[in-house]
Image (cartoon, rainbow, N blue to C red; front, side, top):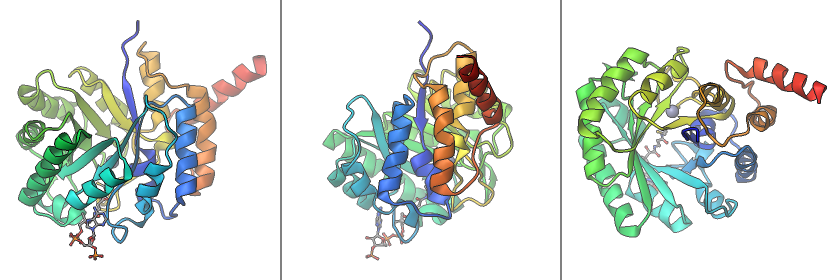
Length: 305
Ligand code: COA
Ligand code: ZN
């Protein structure tokens, strides 16, 4: 059987958090239902953050309570601090992710904490989640480059990864928040990370700002990474990182993985059908690099059928 790669769709969180238009909980749920219809098995549905900081994510508690009941789906939400964790737990969130940036300034700008405070807060949340039996993961953000401090040393990323795993993270997500990684820097960072997390599950989060996200995925596959974040149509950005553009588009990632004989469980035709729907919801033009080719291909096949 073909090897399975987990696709964690982050459009409903990373994608929507930076949009000019704030969607209703109803509209966010419709987006999630569309994604489920495409066979997506892991979705970051939102974040428990200050509605003053990120109004687009207000109402995540209501959203979590109204998610379609599907036990096999990995629904997760991002939490920046203990308050966010408590709100997530009260809402019945099954899986949370803490967000620790690798640099001092990024933590300040993103969550108003120093690096030391963010490390402590993340570790505290991970420990609490473990006690409560809630699955917990940790993002190490700006793992390649920080928009404020420049290149992130690989050994810092490895040390933070080790710290988060020791604190109880079931998985660490190495995140290229501003899309500045390249295959060589992916090898450098993951090489160091693998020294501290030899056989442990890792995930990668790439943005396609400089058109290198797929090349970075290929490099990460060589380091035994078997889970990737991406967002439908490449929806995304980060409101606190100047220069961050869209996430790696789910359709580009799935096309590459399927072409390589890897399995994701995603129906690419249905995913392509969903892109115009997300465009309508958000009012922005979407589509990864392969989108127009995929559409032509699908239309030709439908014409022949
Ligand atoms: N969710 C909702 N409200 C929160 C909260 C959370 N996780 N954490 C704190 N708050 C509330 C507090 O209750 C307080 O409310 P009040 O003014 O009504 O009393 C207010 O926010 C300020 O609390 P404080 O602890 O001083 O937070 P802060 O102002 O230092 O902000 C964060 C810290 C983390 C809440 C804020 O920076 C944030 O939400 N950042 C979001 C970052 C993000 O989503 N980035 C993109 C993804 S990586
Ligand atoms: Zn991102």
